[in-house]
Image 1 (tube, rainbow, N blue to C red):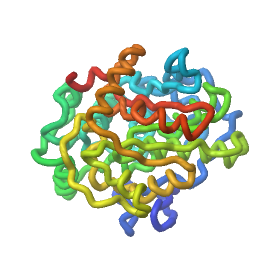
Image 2 (tube, one colour):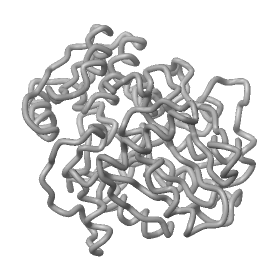
Image 3 (cartoon, rainbow, N blue to C red):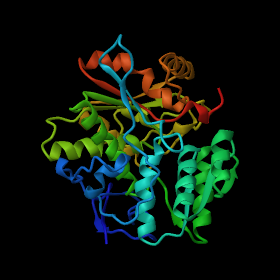
Length: 361
């Protein structure tokens, strides 16, 4: 049985499919720091599975070759700026990293019917990987989600439930459905998704030959942000890097509970009204892992900032001029790099998280 730790109260316990969060309400995570040893890397294995020997599940992983995405200089004009192309994934978003490890673990533990709530990308990813694994999937998605993402879910054979109202209503509806059975395969609450996300940090370290000075990510639920932290924390604990990169998260002013909390010194997300935004992937008013995200931003010397709709559009167009077509949410990392560059003299990595083909222009 695999041990997990509560990110809030610190309790450790064997993981159980029927207890998807700690009794205190906190989310589970793997014990920290994660193990890391370069001698365990298997370069001939595809994508994130080069690190499989560091993970507890070994039998028949659910995979479509996700991970080991290109890390490229954004342009020859600014050599300190690099782009990690995590939108080049089987379902077109970085979510595939966590879905692959999270679903592999759940299937090995006996899950047969998985459920999740999603603004689109996580649902599309879970639907595709569940189909690959031969599992039944039910996804609760806001009715306003991008049609392309909903089409991705439908075509896999997953059951799509469109929920009217704000993003949070999809979560409420799912919680009611869970009372009738099913396994909550949430990318936020499944602790094993963190392993695939942590692999992004290890890939960057391998590809650069060192750790970057800063990494910028879009920030909604904040799972990639936290996964990167766990990955770099593991490298530091194992003696491969001296210090953690600064981690920066970017929200949108229409829904910025973490940016507001960071700016005002709060330890929990600020209460906000969920408003419409073109960056639908970060339209999360009450992120469950908010306290941990705020702590990580402060520990690493990074920040959480919010940007406007016009800044997102400008960043999306700028990336396209460099040949990189990402959805609005994926362009968030591009919006604040000049500010970050003023705070560090060295390498910055932008996490480009979702394909532009997934959202209407």
